[in-house]
Image 1: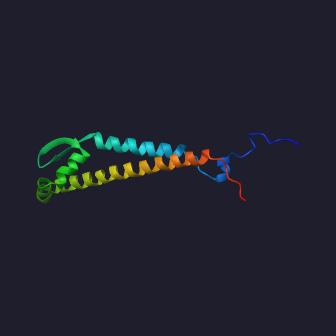
Image 2: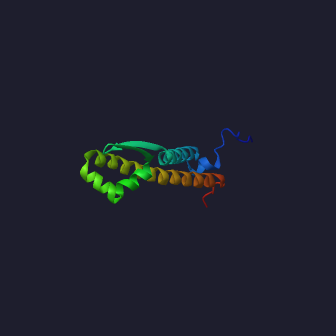
Image 3: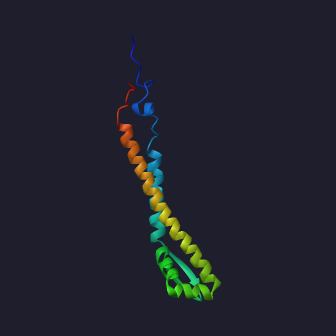
Length: 121
């Protein structure tokens, strides 16, 4: 009687059909890095003849203030720029949420793969 070689014996994780977590770690990490970069990098916007540099959250705060709302009503350029800033702010939030979700899935996959396969009874 011969014992199967380790190369032909399926791992317990393969028996459970649990996906490998490396992809989730990469995707989650990249999403969080991009979100942090978008949150931290300053962008220059020119509206109503004034050119200023600020981060996306700072621009979004300005656009949602009474001053920003008034400027959007007076100038189409300010309205367009504030629209882009609002979308960018939402993208940052989605990247953070999906990045954290991917990392949580990866942690659960690591935990599930580390458990021995349960045999049906």
